[in-house]
Length: 297
Image (tube, rainbow, N blue to C red):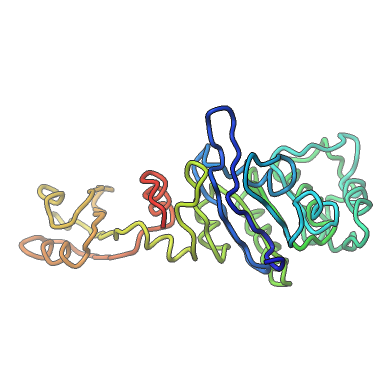
């Protein structure tokens, strides 16, 4: 539908014999915060570049709010924060924000942009004197300048320290809460788990999983059973019912199992242990399971 923020249908892009994007279908409604995950070569960057009108597709269609990507960008409905965007070395942060604002008919107020990007105290700093993390914040400011309906972020927290990441995601949440759509790619799986409404996992240019973070974790099809040995032995743990793997971390043992109930019942027979914990897998475990099998869900 024209109201969709993003609609990709049968999207295909080849590089010689390699299909970087392979008949990809994806729809994102307005107001969503979506994380795009996948190993290197999964097609994430190629998909984003087609979505931004930077690359043509070999087959299929891509639309942003019912328009061709390049038209949506020209209309100011899309803002992008790319990994390797450069700046004029002698320009100050304020100069760059001014340049970004000049590209849009109805830009955000300068002070608002600087505040959202955490750059208020750096407005007079020259671009060639910024740290890697500070430069990332300037890229974010540039993407925000036109108050785009769709904000596309490619590995946005690269080079940011813990505090800067926290501040960045707080700004993204405020922006998304105002009804904007956010699509970001990341290798920081905990960021997708914590900040995305929806996670789309790509492998070999295709969607292999799509849903809320909790559902993606559940697709791993396993749980962990952790406990302290309390003087017991690790011998025989791998032979317990449904156990896939055994990891020993000092006195702490972590079992990955497809049937936690059966594993715990067998474990309780004739073994000494304490501090038992049963947990669902993290997003990282689900991600590895999905991208290694390539099974679509």
